[in-house]
Length: 392
Image 1 (cartoon, rainbow, N blue to C red):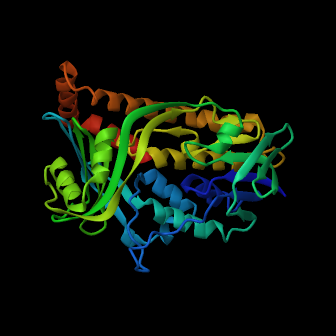
Image 2 (image 1 turned 45 degrees about the horizontal axis):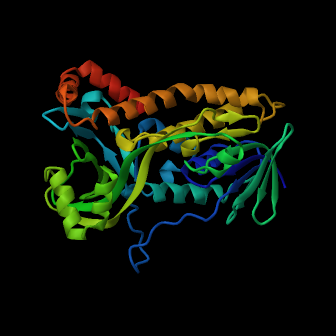
Image 3 (image 1 turned 45 degrees about the vertical axis):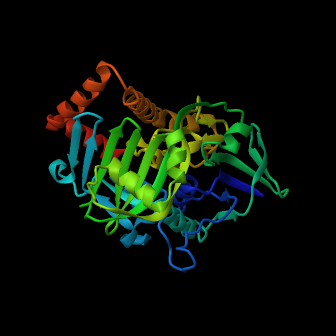
């Protein structure tokens, strides 16, 4: 089967790219192992909360609106963030306010499953798109004139461009011979959702603690989602706690600012690691999302970086002259160059912050908390930080 573009991976980045190209003349195939679905609440047909949530920046909310899914997502499952409170492990504190910054929201908290389900429903109705699902890749050949992806069921997909959107452990990236450097942080990202006693006021909280970084993100109603970037041993301990013990431990970690907690979604965890790819474009191949980079979740930029990869790649392909081959390296290098700086800056900044707050003794402990307080007293600096986050 011949296509212009084959996208490997039906996660958020891969589906968003397909949606972003929906009005183009490109013929597209999307390869995915299983169709996404919303989690169910026990035996109930009603959807339960997904334990994996993302803070979507205004720039990416606009992107999701442009590709046609923002208005179709269930508004009752989206929570705006209008304030942030960040606490150091001493007396340091940093506050952000949408009102003070002159914007309606700093971000929106949305379940991963909600976005993925809506994107899937859109692309499966898309003209000039073939869904290969369930399917898995078996071999990749990047030739001068075309790329050929062979699936495990024997089907051969021939395309001018293959896009790797199949996650941090990307099969496609490995098959293309791109070797990446992983830096494990020795931490687990422990996630769970809770009902809270006190209203959260659409405020996101973050604590830099001796036992990791704890973030509470507002969910609709009196609910919140927790991400605890914990040392591996502690992360495994948290996973083993009873519901009551976990609620007590998480409430204590946040200073009981939202009162008593009740577990809504059981805890889950994933290993945290930094990944840098030396190239995100080769002849006939482009990498997007976690296949191209991973970052520590302390900044909340993971999927935002992925959506910006997709936006830039889609625009690069759409801006190409009619006769230009969409798999030509000079064209794909435009995409690679356009994304290189932001990815490098955010990976470096989050890595340094993680290392800074991982120091337990010495002068850095006082200096980092002093830095938070100093930044908190400088409205101009805070405004610059907010503006950068809004646009990323």
